[in-house]
Image 1 (spheres, rainbow, N blue to C red):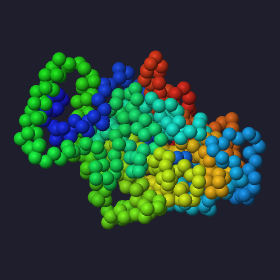
Image 2: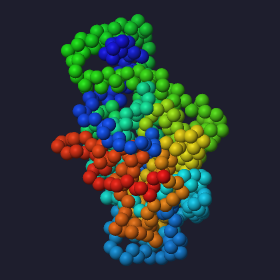
Image 3: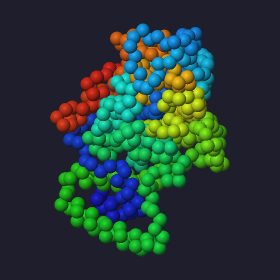
Image 4: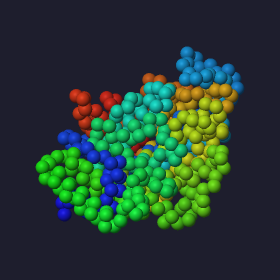
Length: 481
């Protein structure tokens, strides 16, 4: 059976066609990404954890004892500071106490204590700087390497460069916050000028319909088995007639591949997302609560752990089955009450449930991958669009801080138990202002660990050789084991 004949016989007909539209249908570019793969990879797959809204490095991972000592004193940065809103109140100490964990004695906050068992596998980068204090631009910069829309997401570049490890599932999967998209929505994982088959496929683990159009809609008496058979037969005739005069059309071939994948996903995806197949102790480790979802109206740690735990466990199952890049989002776009990390009003109220739930689920993910032998070739990247100020906003909140913030990496060839780059005594700017870490360096290091030279994975678009790292970036050798 040829690829084109498959269109007339596969799966459940129009459900496949609708699903395939989500997977993309454009042809491959003429250039080949294979030349960019220049070294044996240490990592084969990636999980990106994105804390939407700007998580506070000062309250989670970057301990500043000077802030504890000077808490409540008038803030003096020693220079003119451009605040985003009104965030130049007194110095504000971390909301939660910090304690040392692991052999490396890394100080982390009590609110992320479930990650304490994992710090010896984690490399923290505390001197990352951004370009903007605007959420949409800061999010795009971390997700795509550019602070303007129209560029492929990280996962799209990885999918384009390395292809899929599975014939039955997409290479790039996105697990959004169930309450809504973060700033920019699908622009964060769009394929842009790469073939659209490399865009992220959105999945909602635990939802009644985790993937849109995975199956055909129920149409009662209007669609019978005979009617569907006749419809597919007619569709097959039309497809063969259309294809006969377009034998060399790469776009048509790409669309056919999307339909093939859609048909295979109807069998593979439900099994991959069925976390009921996991032992009870595994689900409990991730913070997943069985037996219903009656939660309080207020944001709370147990619910956040359950939500994040379902996404992290689904991610592990997808990786096991060949998905190359999984992007997990925590937090939606701006709104009230806060359901994101943008804690202008109250760090304790907003960060507390999100941070503990994230740490519970992500700590379980790291331990689970490690016990299965998957952590050594799975790279985990934790990020956010920028940090928060060491001074207070309104007494209980913190304003935006694009001048320094934290990323951390784990597994996949990363040297664990280290800190690379420090912020200053306030957590305001890098300690060494002449040598900050840029997002391009993080992206270059990620591609390096996947065996890709970030300067060679390029696509010519509008007369320019575009790449994930723009014209910047270097591999952070100190992070590589």
